[in-house]
Amino acid sequence: MAKPTLVLGATPNPDRYAYKAAIMLSSYGHPIVLYGIKHGEIAGIPIHLAAPQVEIDTVTLYVGPQNQPPYYDYVVGLHPKRVIFNPGTENTYFENLLKENNIEPVIACTLVMLTTGQY
Image (cartoon, rainbow, N blue to C red; front, side, top):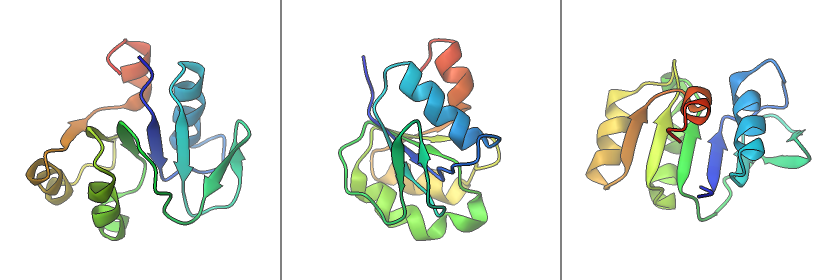
């Protein structure tokens, strides 16, 4: 089943995992919304530089913990079912905030989840 996914920390740099995840999510049939701080696109989909208000199932996080606080209210306000904390993005405070709002924090790698059928 397709799970609309917000890639938070999207970048047009093909060497970055956020880029690779966006490509893989799309190739697995999951609609993606891209939100980042660098203008560009991935697979013809534009990267939003301002917070898009969208209905999504999952947020996959590619923003380090030190840069996450400005996104707390935004992510909680989207009411996703889950937020995937990819390696290097783990943040106990944010994870607890999500739990308090009935959003599942998942400590995992989106790329691994997709390739192993756990997405």
